[in-house]
Length: 174
Image 1 (tube, one colour):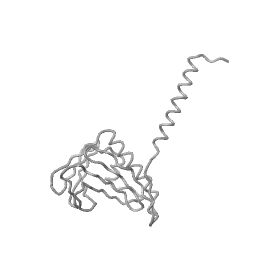
Image 2 (cartoon, rainbow, N blue to C red):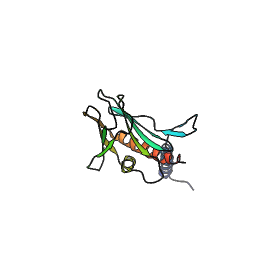
Image 3 (tube, rainbow, N blue to C red):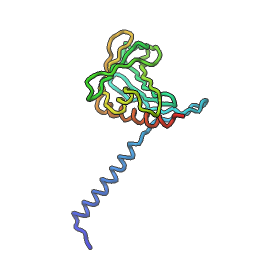
Image 4 (cartoon, one colour):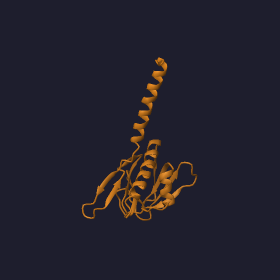
């Protein structure tokens, strides 16, 4: 039985589009940097740095913690434990305020630290993995606000990698 040319062409295009979508699904696998401490043999996962407007961020996880480390690129970049970050999420009218969990520094480093656990994460960590972060306003020692805006691609990358690190990080819990 001979198939019409249009039907053959349609089936060929359908097969090609399906194989393309399968390749697209393969590329969504979490690709994290995995390191093993040579002394403690503890595994650490990292997203690597994601460039933002005026800053960059990396998300790391070990068996105890999940850490968001922001590196701010501005002149006034001294932070201590009184420094704050106001997080603005898409679809949420109110801001979420958090404090720097890192050490005092003037290198522009601001940390958000969460306990790595199998249970439901804190509200902030849950929002970072389920909502798009649109803007962060850091307030350091100079009390001058430093605004970091996230574009659509940055929002998606941050949310996706936060989800990856949270999911894969749970497997490190002893």
